[in-house]
Amino acid sequence: MAPKTCFLFFLALVSFSAVVAFAEEDDPGLVMNFYKETCPQAEDIIKEQVKLLYKRHKNTAFSWLRNIFHDCAVQRCDASLLLDSTRRTLSEKETDRSFGLRNFRYIETIKEAVERECPGVVSCADILVLSARDGIVSLGGPYIPLKTGRRDGRRSRAEVVEQYLPDHNESISSVLDKFGAMGIDTPGVVALLGAHSVGRTHCVKLVHRLYPEVDSALNPEHVPHMLKKCPDSIPDPKAVQYVRNDRGTPMVLDNNYYRNILDNKGLLLVDHQLAHDKRTKPFVKKMAKSQDYFYKEFSRAITILSENNPLTGSKGEIRKQCNLANKIRTTDDEP
Image 1 (spheres, rainbow, N blue to C red):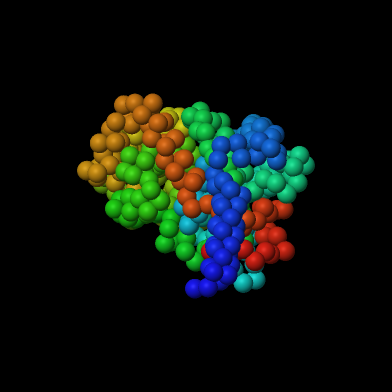
Image 2 (image 1 turned 45 degrees about the vertical axis):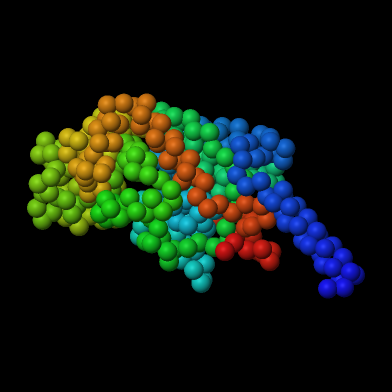
């Protein structure tokens, strides 16, 4: 190779390295307090809005908690769950697997409050994750420091929801495998399912354990209450028919769930499996005895879930509205 050619090749290599280095520097990924320079009040605004909404509508806290599972488990945390359906695509929130999810309008309420302070800066994906963090606190659970810096995806992925999101009727092996693919180990899965400590389960999801015959695995002392709450073998999905997940402390994220499922009072099949499968039972028993251990594993698992394959840097976008992708698209779309 001629000297001049070598020199030009060297310059090109140096230039390429500089571009790569700049791109890496420009994309710090997820970090603590990502908005400290661009919108220093962002996290405080989100926290205050969550508190106000919870005060007015107690069930919003359950929604925040479910949102992080349903969004982050489906390929990545990018607020794809919040997008509306279009003429071409069905949204994730309108699939059968999202049955019972609600209160999306309150995410918009939070987004509007943040936009008033810092227009076009804070992503809906970060709002979704941080509202879950603050919702957990509203339910008496632990404060979990979570990183920010996510950007929003531009499309909902209803067609792959079943592939990624664990279902309450699946085998415990399948549930462990799906969470495991996100890096969440067995004690983490047991802790995440502790979210069933709060909220309620619609009769549509559990009548198969009551009709045509009562599941013999259910605690017989709990069955009359379930039958009273779910008197129809084919309940109307639009009717307000449900059973509290935990009758003792229904509004508190605590370890009472584990004592219930060890006593065969779990409503869903996955609850029963969790308490009896040899891989998960030791952790169920440990969490039933120690709330601190439950909180420790729950915090760790939520952190891993919240960092599942996010869009950062120049990927994706910052939506103006959480239910709609921006009209102007860049060339650097998400994969």
